Image 1: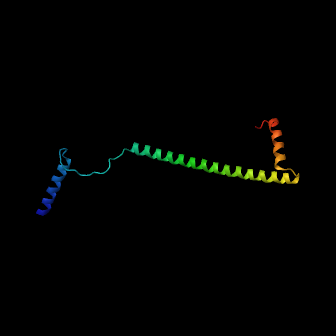
Image 2 (image 1 turned 30 degrees about the vertical axis):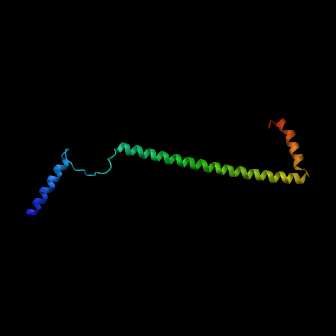
Length: 109
């Protein structure tokens, strides 16, 4: 029982020293506690950044899809043009001259 009182007294003294603003103890207490408003603001910022990243990713995917579609259309056009040139026995030079002569009339430069 005496040993318990000694421990209790030592513990009480240690608590009093911790409460004393002039104590010389350097006890790590961990990171400072952030306010709820700060946590909510950080959470909103994280959410907005995630939304922005997702939107940028979707835009990039859409641009890639559009580029792939444009390339497919270009290939289809070239294929059809070559078929027409073969059907009408036209050379590439003849088709080029034809397109060049039509361009100013259509406003194409």
